[in-house]
Image (cartoon, helix red, strand yellow):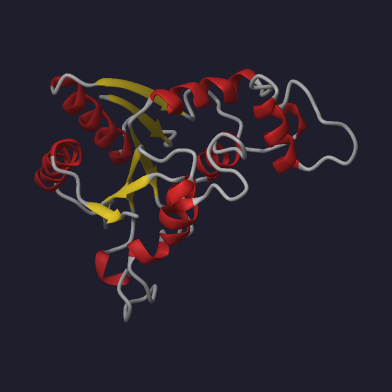
Length: 222
């Protein structure tokens, strides 16, 4: 299986990085081909703008319609976008490793969604959800939150579970493009663990990766 890992953390000694490293090593030991997009490492630019295109349609600039124009004109995107598109095109499973910031993902990962999941490539008019252009592929999110799990409850401090909070990504991004969404792997209270607890988290993630490949559980499926 070809697997793309999209990783968004600036610190190689972080728990997010450790989870990502365990995920990759587990997949490789199972014989899978893994490609990593280290967004901070490659200096991925998160802001969508005119420089994302090698050609422009002319007239009033509409970013979404320029995406469609670029897709229809031999992938007329900037090289960094084309590289990510090609990796995504080859992947059967995409795993996103990220901290949870402000009830979402960091800007650099949101920018990857904005710039790579383009109209004409990941979705199109009338081609969303079950008709999305990425159908047949799977997506899994691995998220690390600093707050305790009891905060992420309907009656907790945040008034919602983390799955509910991430609904705009699970449904409005992944499912929207046709991806089958696997059960996420979440870590809570990430700064307050003993060495033994951190080791247990990594072991649990190894098991979750094995399950995602061998016996996937879906968060949502058409």
